Length: 206
Image (cartoon, rainbow, N blue to C red):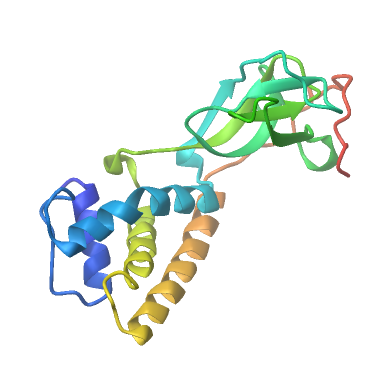
């Protein structure tokens, strides 16, 4: 059976020993209402913390023409981005090691209406953790991790007993650690002999 949001929420309810299950997030039950309220934010937080390769996207950044003070360029923050992991020159495949990584910072635009990614690199590309909303794309380990994250999140509004709530939080943190370690093994980037200086301050924060 394909993984669905409802099946993940029901797994979370099972994890806190609830005898209830839901058929839809739109139903009027307390369980459905609570799951609907916490699902998106819990999913996004788990993705951002894990930073798995399967949720990583690389895309060219849009130059806003608004360079924050101390930086040469200000790029629009991607709308589907949960966490920027790397900024790279266009076309460079390997992630730069150590002090050769491109320095960047996140800030608000001058109008205070959106986030900017600031760096000194022209035509920059970003590797980032993308918001993945389709649960059929989730590997089993992430499904389990998310279910425990939801379990921890629903304990207070569903008035789950304290021992179960603490156990759910502890299990979530353990699953998150295991899933993060597993995700880290899904990448391999050998040293790139074609790395060159790009004329910017790469070690701004060193």
